[in-house]
Length: 375
Ligand SMILES: Cc1cc2nc3c(=O)[nH]c(=O)nc-3n(C[C@H](O)[C@H](O)[C@H](O)COP(=O)(O)OP(=O)(O)OC[C@H]3O[C@@H](n4cnc5c(N)ncnc54)[C@H](O)[C@@H]3O)c2cc1C
Image 1: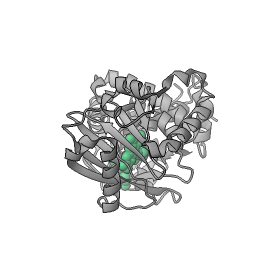
Image 2 (image 1 turned 90 degrees about the vertical axis):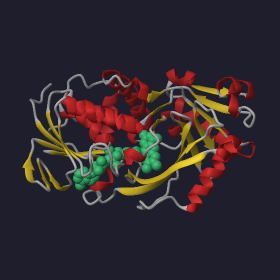
Image 3 (image 1 turned 90 degrees about the horizontal axis):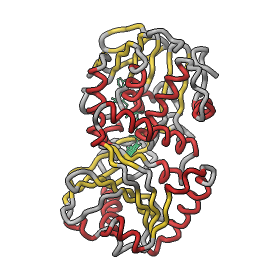
Image 4 (image 1 turned 135 degrees about the horizontal axis):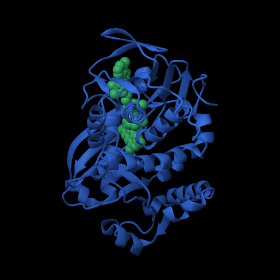
């Protein structure tokens, strides 16, 4: 490592800030993590998220870089969960992509686009299987009655987001990082932050505030997402499900105790108000159409929040001497944060070892680069 022990501030303890804190503390730096909310609760988008790690499903509408970063994150999550002895937070048995008979064209289009994009990655062919009714019955019996075809994305996974945020908080505290919360940061400048406790100096500041950084990043926008938690004693699904539909992409994520997360809307608005009737109607009727057993499900809660997004819907690492801003994780915070943290720290530390396949990708992520970062 070329960097000596540094005194670092990270502002924002959402999923990006926590991943970065973990990655940096692993390299022996002295870290202070600030968040405006208490450690185990808050307004972070990370608390609302479904926790899916779905690089294949997302590839249909996302850039290849999201897929590559996602693959890197999948392996980092597995490694980190092992260190934290928290493998139980990972459910890794893949996604079934389905469509009703009248929407078969949407599924076919999804398959064509995924196939075209994945053709560049030879090793990926086995991760996508096209299933007939009988094969659906073997994998997810309760879906076979209504669906004749499905696409199975075997390498996708899902994390228990609340459990994970708690586990990371414990792991970070036990490795000695200083956690300042609730503590709102009012101003961020290179090597300096101003919070309610006054102004403090650091060797480097990382800004991971998500939507909280809006004033500093004028092209950052909010994309509202709403989702519903239900409990359904009459339904037993074990895989994540994506329903292809001409107007929206609905997902269903099984959690413990027959609970399911149903989501999510994607609305161009900075609107944190409760779920609209229209969204509830659309999501719930789609849910009932997947499996009639959901008729007797109990609605546990609905949640809405905003995803921090940049104009190209891709993440961006913006750096200058003393300050790095990481933002724009959009609908992929859990999918991208470990990989972004790893790339950021490796470049910041000027690691000679950083010459693998992530190196060219990382160059496209850095918006500006100070001399502290390798080009
Ligand atoms: C409905 C919905 C479903 C989603 N599902 C998924 C999914 O399945 N998979 C996936 O990968 N992603 C998903 N996402 C996206 C994911 O939640 C976001 O991409 C991710 O949370 C962004 O991470 P972040 O750390 O940048 O921001 P956040 O998670 O929002 O964290 C920002 C943190 O900064 C703090 N902060 C802000 N301002 C200040 C300040 N001035 N001072 C101190 N602290 C401050 C906040 O309190 C917060 O803790 C979903 C999002 C939504 C809304």
